Image 1 (tube, helix red, strand yellow):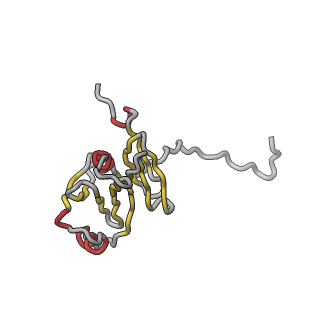
Image 2 (image 1 turned 180 degrees about the vertical axis):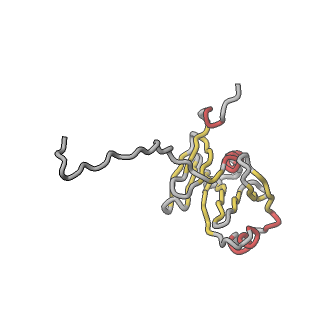
Image 3 (image 1 turned 120 degrees about the vertical axis):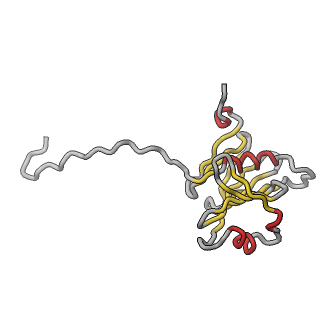
Length: 160
């Protein structure tokens, strides 16, 4: 029968507690926040890692304008629009090593870094998994139904 990927044990779900996004990553990789969760690194034992950053964007700024001013040395013609499994629109570089998810106020960037001395890109599929599962909104624990506290005792009444 069909099984959810996250239930397979091969991936875990990372939920960023302060920036409000979530995604899947391989269960054998490690996740660590850098710079107070503005930058998160998801690392393999080989030294390859994927960097996740949330960069500010002006609300009136289009993604292409933001890209021109913020992605130094990159060409917008190398970008391909796509929609992930959670219907979130994004842009990815043609080599599938960089992914952008723009919102009104920020752009989430997922960037693959090969390990030191790596001659091949061994984990391109991991960045694809993370991009496919990326979504905003970290659902916190559900609060119990609230009930009214008993009224405070009248000062003239003795306490039980």
